[in-house]
Length: 59
Image (cartoon, rainbow, N blue to C red; front, side, top):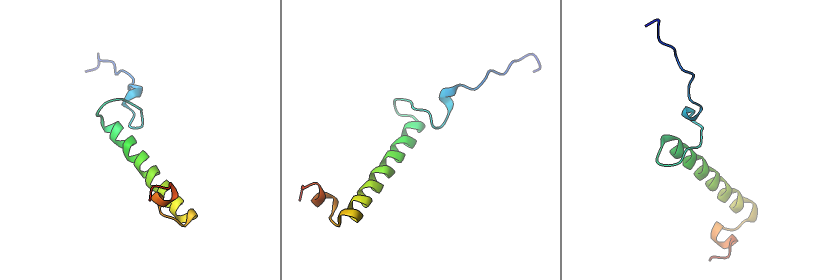
């Protein structure tokens, strides 16, 4: 197999690349954004002393 050239890896194959559709990378990004959302809710509740729904005036 000495006559074959190895092509450079495609940049889109990176696990952190942004792609559209149902791909493993999109599941990684969904999880990251969900973690940021949960963390922001916890911080709002901690610093305001109210629940998340009370803070936004829903309850």
